[in-house]
Image (cartoon, rainbow, N blue to C red):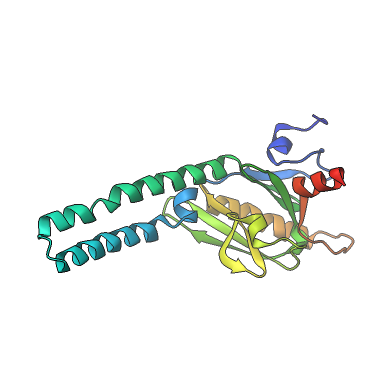
Length: 220
């Protein structure tokens, strides 16, 4: 396949890296953690508890005895757990089809379940990278501030974007199992890139492949 290495295939590239560019780090979201983080399972759990309490209170006001009222209210919990299970599976699929790659020139996001896409963010376009810990064992998110998103929007990136940052979106590496190590590698790459002598040229974040647009052009 065009002489691609396994790491280049995982990155979603359709051709080998240019001369002088090399992969420094590669990772993916945690399949177990992405769903709970993206779909905010804690808030959903609080909602289910409030729903049970509200349903029980309403039936009590209607003259139901406490036992039957509570039993009927608790019926919402199995339905809620089924919904959470579906969301967890969706998150696991998103995680298993995603790959994050750091080179000495850019960050590459290969994402998508039904329709995969590869998005490149040049290091020259990144003005800030911040880590948000999700647990005490290293799980966390890394969000980028990009000075020119090149037309990318929140929906193109979701769920690999910081929540509720729509304009401009903040591309993110979500639910990384070892976020501190990844953040250190990114920091070192940014320092090396910004201190290395080079010709200055504008760079923007761009999709490597846009299957829908390519299909439309082929059919035109």
